[in-house]
Figure (cartoon, rainbow, N blue to C red):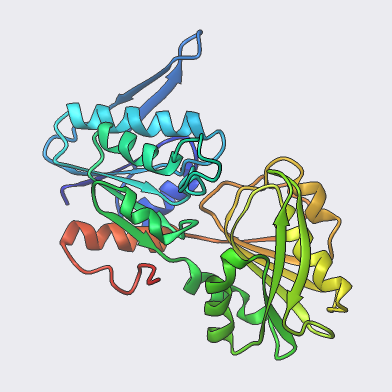
Length: 312
């Protein structure tokens, strides 16, 4: 098989799971820093003429992990790789898809241009914050969905008395997918963002009284949106047994403190981002290795990804 898989330092266990799915060893590469903090990357095996896949979510610290990916890509390109694909399960800067105030960058578009300049010819991502990002890329973007995996993971923990909760208007379509597949009612929390970390709930559409809430979102950063949504449904007399489902569990800043204070019985997330083993909320990680490995296998063989990708 003329295929190689390399990993950055963002999530080596996920990269190993991808390689295991493909029955391939991870490619050998060294990444270390000089005393001044400058990063040095060296690929330690031949990639000439190969189809190379670089597994590196751009999770926090985003800048460091992005630079690793770019240097790995450039090293492989200069070493003669035929095709370079960035496997970026969590895509940082996806929320910066427009100018809200007029005097700011469109970070997602800039990042797409930077990835092209770094030599990447394709990107594989999972559950982007908005599907419109595909239009920003000057090369193919394969947008995979982890929702089927997450649905099966939470199925044992939901009942006829559960209700799917969208924590804001941006997650409504996602919540509809969960509600439809699980045959459950849905509620929507209207939120107002006060700052990057502070969120206020303004009201709820839908009935949550006497029901166990299942809060779904594409990502959890500081936990402010989830906190506001859970407090809102509890104030509306929902059962204080909450399940939270997300594709990307960044869990930065005050997230641990916020979520620990809520009656969350289970947090279900993919392993797109490595989560600390001592996180204070019961966490069930859904592995993306098989999904990403299957996508890579099909790309290498020129087969369709139709049943794996997000359909808006």
